[in-house]
Length: 393
Image (cartoon, rainbow, N blue to C red; front, side):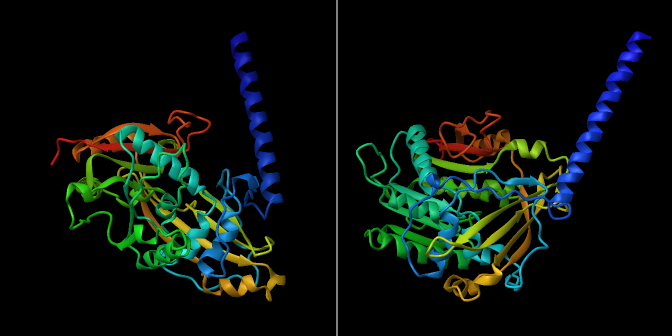
């Protein structure tokens, strides 16, 4: 009897706590845009990346994004999509990747300098030689490739030997956009001739010159781009193409979502963040709102493919119609698309790598050598460092 009373008491306490949580949740949702939450996080300015000021739309639009770095993004509830102003860009596009300026803004919070430092460090540590020739697949705006050529030559740096960086992307718009950025940022440094951008498919590509001294030292697939390879055949085709392009012992570094996301995906949730836009006087004149995954997305646990809803929405302030910055953003558009993306586990990457002549040398929880893959607090990405097995032809 005593045991039954005790269990009943504990059950009643649990119900009371659940009721309190529901009441609080209802209050917070009702207080924030009729039930839809969005957390706007303003990171410290110390994480900003310097850039060259220019009147070009492509680089100027990136100014606001790069002046701040997102520390984390809101999850589960997303952001309010019903509060755009009359100056919101109405025109939509079918393909997110055909609007490179919006894509560039959306991911402008990333610290490319720090990430490239890690990529070069990881390659040299596990391959045993510095990266002189680099290949970036599904490169998008090409920010990592361009940053690699901008890496400063200091006494403490081992990255001064980079001779050539090649970017590859399937989207002709991304290729053209990346070339313009490279021209602006590398020409004055005399490094533009060391950069090339090729339109091609990461799933199946070849390079004519296969002499050992023309092969790449390191290849990068970043920002979850490998997720577009939704079948094992797709992945193996990509890996074999990379294998043929790398020198013996060369590295393939892949960045993916952490597997924790896959195994916690009981139901699809909305994931969103926003990027403030600033003019040349560092005054905010609008924002870019991003949804990367929505509640109605379908996740297939058999194929591990989720149909991600990707939405980018550029909004400018009502009282900024005469601002020169607004005039420059007229070419940018809102966009929405459903993109099938595969969720990977570490063991899958290891097995697929072995099938294609690679071995996994290390795993990290971010593009940061100090973040362990098993760190529950800091690890939020699955970063795989693969090395080409030397005895495979």
